[in-house]
Length: 217
Figure 1 (cartoon, rainbow, N blue to C red):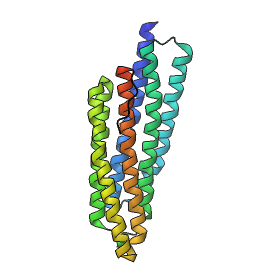
Figure 2: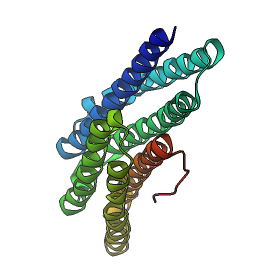
Figure 3: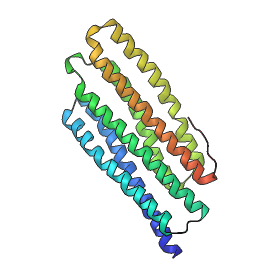
Figure 4: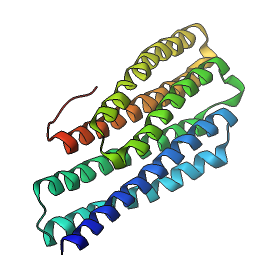
């Protein structure tokens, strides 16, 4: 009976990692769509966000089934609760990448600001690294490595404030930049929130390993 339960826990974690990989791919596509002004890719990101939503539902139902039909030990219960909470964060992260895709569709290409877009891409790449690192660390449930990943969020926060100021300055100085500037503000805001949710999942990993609830951002 216990062996079957362990197998189901492993399958649950695999579902979570597959959902995380889908979110990582969505984020990578969002940055590519911005760089290439690829509206087809942007539309695909928005469409595929539904698959991420479906993955969340599948995981939550699996968690509910385990809790209802099994008798989890304390550590098992922490694991299931961690997955339930973290998959909700992943779903929101997918929403933010769909938000970037929508902003790409609203850009006026003739008024594109290459320097600003490069700065957003810089912040996005840092967020991608955080997400990639998280997917590598998650199966080991390593609390120390989770804290180290969450600490990377500060650099993205700093970029968020700096880039936002740069965008607002350009919008004040150039009337033609107002439309695109608003979309750039949405984009950098989505990147910042994306990385915040990664930190949230890192907090869950610390809880899973130690049983302690901590704030890492």
